[in-house]
Image 1: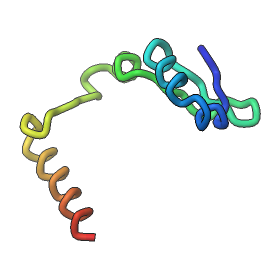
Image 2: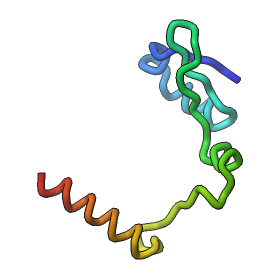
Image 3: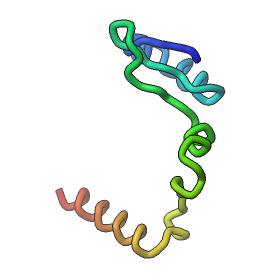
Image 4: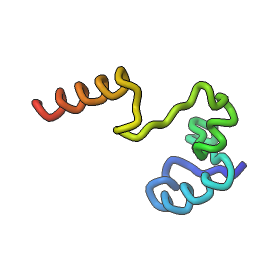
Length: 78
């Protein structure tokens, strides 16, 4: 697994994100791993497809659609 520092993220975010599309990438702070960036494919392998769902706005179940729209409405009104 490739490792980058938090400071590297400011300077080379594109390179880090490209690397994360191929394999998980560790972000370190003071030499210790703090975050792991991974692709959706790797994430779904970890949690299983039953826990990870993605929808289009039109294809989302009613309760997901309603929750999303109410959240958007609340942010627009601010």
